[in-house]
Length: 421
Image 1 (tube, rainbow, N blue to C red):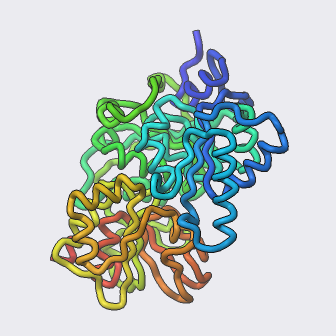
Image 2: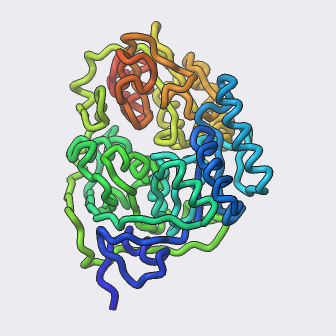
Image 3: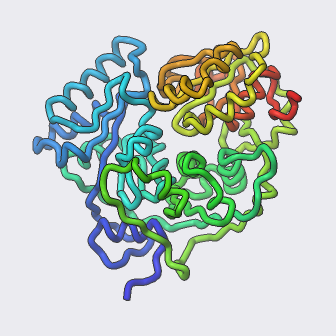
């Protein structure tokens, strides 16, 4: 009989063809998919060409130009062209041209391309997002992604797992973003270094899939190798009619061994903000109202889904962005963009004097669509606030939920939606 295993261990063992694995073990696994974007794909493609064997599966490679797309300059156009030409030459099924796509980590779950039980690597650190639907997904370097594209295989060191059991009802105004900011603030940006982060408890069970994807997305901000949620009825309902192939559910054994287990009372999780220059530098919004701002960004692979757009629009309804503040709203995919139109959210955003963009990673990585000047401050629903992340090294980025971002845009300083009443 195999040893009791965590969710991460079970998925890795299955893909290694083993009955069991243990933390620290080096294994080689069969991959279900390999992801790259317009920045990372050209390097991966160079590796594929050097290997000279073509691609392992035209259905197992996902190419999404989203960082500097639509192209902001000649260099970004060249990078995207390399990706496009490779996709066409190899008949890649899942190449997403601009106008048909969105931000990679929102797009692949939305399209049903990634499914529970999958083992996915991606040449982007936030590939860990797909753990929100029970897949083991993790970021790798572009060279490793290229080898994966050519061979369909990758090596892993089996990570230890830290389990976060969160029970109870969240306070008013708190969201999934506040849960992950609370966790990162509690354990630090290296608190889960090369560990799988497994989330459970009644609070987690009550979250939407969008909320779970938000939490899994930021596992890397705690140093995590992956963020994982078990599939339940909420997840199954979300997947129904969306997934394009059969999937397998994995569930942690009750007596699995964890590196650590944290028990968190949801009542202790309040709306919070990560101050510069680390996601772990968390403070309650109630202690951050004195911070004036110049810009707000609502979107990204963390918080650009329709649930996030609705939360922001509810705050903006009947209000306008404060004089002297810029607010940029970026739906994460074309479908989210359309949903915003059909639900009347675009009318609210434009009426509130927001800029609304086509889907792009743009400002999150300081690419374009919202670069900060020296000394400017931005409240953002993105995932990182490192020095110079959005522009000038003296600028500052504060991380928050979409609702807090919208309230801050209206107030002209960091604020709660309830502050506007």
